[in-house]
Length: 395
Image (cartoon, rainbow, N blue to C red):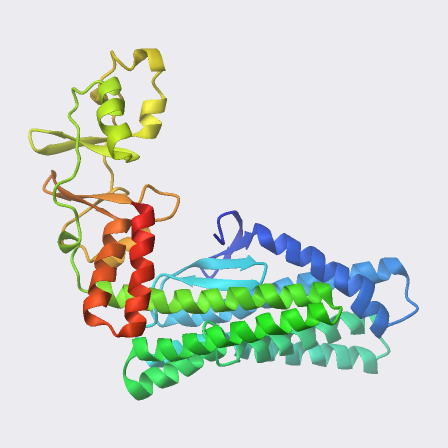
């Protein structure tokens, strides 16, 4: 999955700027392409070291341009009341990570158009710098870097305005259709279908480039097409999930007969009778109907194997915290953000210190799959089938 290996660089306007490991590959490829191809062809007879310096500076300029583009989205989103988890730069550019979709077509439009406006503004500034430098007789490296940044920001703005979700143009179109039809789901279906088609077109373009001898360029178009198509399909799925869970309390989704253990249980019995039988990574510890703690596989690992028969659960259990507990009246949609892939994906449902149930990602996906199968149309039922399969895989 994307964004599993990322580094936080800095914060601006309260927004974390993160770097995915895949960006390093892009930075190297861009620098190499500029240093051995673009700049030598555009500005011949310079020293090789100069071309490499131009490549590095231009790559850093592109890095900054993408950050500013995504900040345009993020700042406007924050102004409209949306929470932003951060901005992550990865191999295909950058993405602002929102905790929820915009609440209205107007907010969607403002947020979507902000990024391309920033890119156009940057293109104008860089073009002015290149033109001014050229008029004043500045050296080719200076003019060349700014001219490239003006060109790449223009390309970034134009490409992102293609009306195919999840590109910015797709979000602008979705806002218009949402306003016109009054349905976010229908607007998302149309724009994600266009996004999927655009992704297929990029894949075909990549294959044609490979067959034409442009292997590296073709591979990039092919991979970009796969990414756009996958992101479009996932976006529609996310909208269906959010719409299906809005207003649904956890108590309607949870398993109200959770597997729990007592504090007097020995570790050997916990492993043999519970871990090896149910395959869960952590268990609630209950005494006299009250939740007194939690015990996980990590807790068990702290005990030497020879001591399992003499060590009790109460000796190693931890206090249950807000990170793994939730109230039964909490909306199910709020749980999605809490259930990170790196977590156990299981939350304890408690009320007044008593355990009422457990809710898992599998429970959420299963509920959505059944709801879409009953209430949706044929396309939604296809999505329900994939969500149901994902839920079974988690189980």
